[in-house]
Amino acid sequence: MPIAAVIFDAFGTLLQIGKGLSPYKNIIKLGIEQGRRPKASDVIDLLSKPMDLRQAADFYGIHVSSRYMYQLESDLQRELASIQAYPDGIAAVAGLKAFGLKVIVCSNLAQPYALPIERLYPELDGYVYSFSVGAIKPSFEIYDRAAQLAGASPREIWMIGDSERCDCAGPTEFGMHGHFLDRTGVTGYRSLDEFALAVLRAR
Image (cartoon, rainbow, N blue to C red; front, side):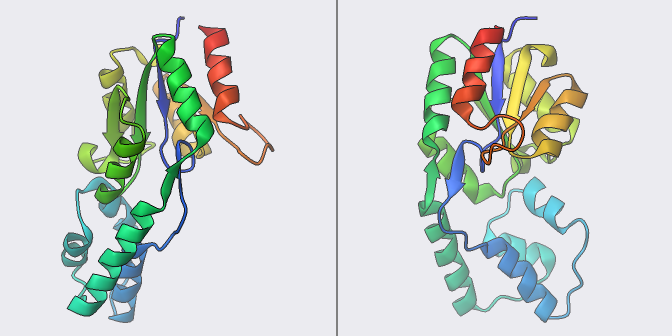
C-alpha cells in the first residue's frame, strides 16, 4: 500500500520545551493545597477542553490569587518562548513534503501550546489537537480526524512519536502504521531523519 501521509506527534518529537515550568500542573497542586482531591479525569479534561490558565482554575474550582495567577501566566509565556524545533524535525518535514507526502501533526496538549507548533512548523497540511477534537490519544477519534485532514485511509498513513501507547500502539490499532521515536537509541527510530528515510524507501 503506498504511503500518502505522515503524522507526527508534537512535543518530544517535532519540538522540545527548553524551560519546563508546568503552570497547569501547578494549578492542580494549588487545588490539592486547598483541599481539592485530584480526579483521574483531571488530565483528560485539561487536554480535551480549550482552556487557558484562568479557565482551567475556574473549571476545577480552584481559587488562584491575582498575584499567583500573574506568576503562572508569566511562567507559561516563558515556557512557550523556550520551545524549539528539533533540527531533524525540520529536515524530516521538509524532505517528506518535497516528495509530495502530506504531513500532519497530532498532539495531546493544552490550548496555549498550539501556537508554538504553528509558528515553528507553519507549512504543515493539518494540525490536530486534543483540545479542539475533544478527545486525547489513543482515542480513535483523534486519529480519525488526522486521517480526514490527510485525505487518506489509515493504511496509507505512517505515524511517529515518543509515546509507545499514543503514537505507536494506538495508531496501529486504528489501522495506521505506528512507529516509536526513541532518541536514546534503545528501541524504535533514533531520529526523525532515520524515520523519514524509511518512509521514502517504503513508498
